[in-house]
Length: 397
Image (tube, rainbow, N blue to C red; front, side, top):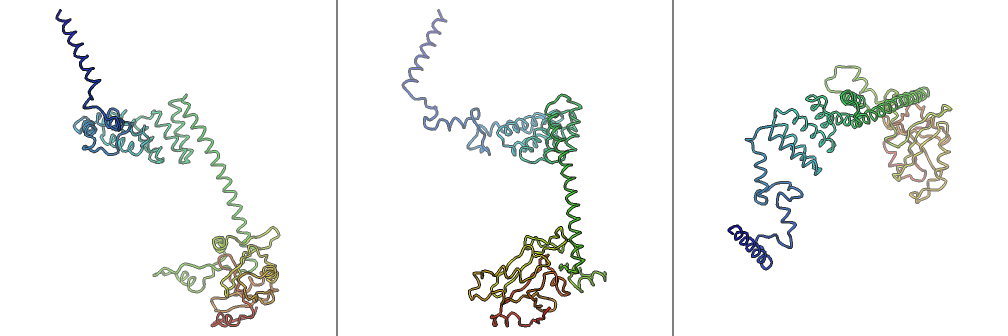
């Protein structure tokens, strides 16, 4: 009878509670408007932990964090907690924080070597996804020093070496792993990839070497052709170092800036985008710059055949007068061509019927930066002539 009474009281109490629940609001309930926000503040139901845990805003989280990171706990336990924390960050793809957590776990220097290997391989994975390939490789290597047969570390080491294009090392990692895990599919795939890339790299290196040798031969032939014609290349040299006892260095720097014939003297690509070329018939084609100082204009001929005459190019170029020639003075018959000898402050006048080679072979002509340049003046600009030629001598070739 007593039990029946208790049962009856219990049922009556529940009925009363349910009746009140239907008619009265629960005072501690979540708000109808922002219940999802409030729900997300409860640690158990959080979808994502905040970046920084503020004890005022998240007291429950701060309390849990202090329990987890209690320094009085054994190092193994602390390291394991930090490993789990790192794993949580890794799942969220927050690899930077995962690295921090795994590193903190390793700093605990716990005696559990299995745990240390896991921390190293997990940190290697986080580094890998951050693009820190060398750091990932270092962690994989450290893990295999502790446990040489750790499969994940071996796979990560091989993958890192492939990404770093260190294919022979990648093969060593794969071979080491396959000796211990002969049936692992991933290691076999990585080995095949490393071997393929190694062969391709070796093939590319051979091709590059052949190409380099060919280019060097072409440049040497080009320099020989320039040398045979007696053409001089101009190249500025660095000033001598103070305190130098070398008479040879002083003589070279003080006497002249004319460089010996070398590949450096043909660096016209930086200036004009073109370079002297030796064709199959043994003729040189030079990039040539024409300057019009009166109007601060210029023209560029990308391939001026050494046996062509200046008049051929000028007649073609000024078939139609340029828009900047408002006075219509730059007719081919009015043009006068010069090259400048800066050392002697002299302008040498060139006859239009002269070939480029004849000018280049003149004793006072020096090719600068691989591009011969010439000054074009025009008859009928007496005021500019006087101003431009002031203080300079003029001579005819």
